[in-house]
Every structure is written in C-alpha cells, then in structure tokens.
Image (cartoon, rainbow, N blue to C red; front, side, top):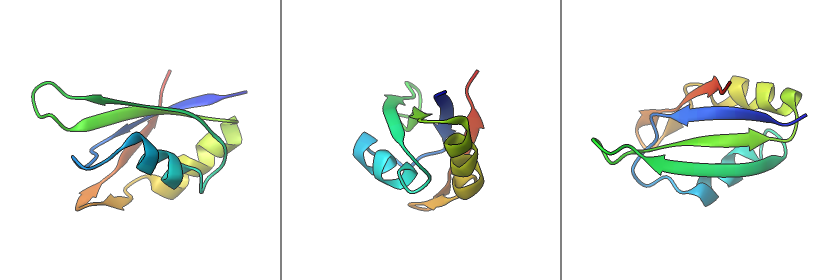
Length: 78
C-alpha cells in the first residue's frame, strides 16, 4: 500500500527531480509534487512512497536531513 509524506523546510533550489532521486535511496518513489508557498516562495512537497515500510525508512533517513543549508522536515500525510 502506498504511503504519502509531507516534506517541508526545503531550499529554493529544490526540484521534483532532486527530491525523487534523494527519496529513491529509501525505496520506490511513486509521485513527487512540489508547491510554492505564496508568502515565502519556498517549496514544500508531497512524496508518495511505494509501501508503508519505504515511507517509514524515508522518514527515519531524511528527518532533519541537511539540504542546501536547511534541515528537511518530513511528516506522514493523512
């Protein structure tokens, strides 16, 4: 069963391709969607992992992950 994650506190240079490549280290990435905050212009996104186990692995591996001077925030999207 696929599992969706919310990813925030990303750098302005973050792209869907860069997030897909990074999260692929934790398992199958089904979809990546980036949106821009209207106030700050910074991206945040949603990543759908192939299984719940892969989503858990991604949360453990990338919570607080340094990305271009920012610490990535990851949470389960419900």
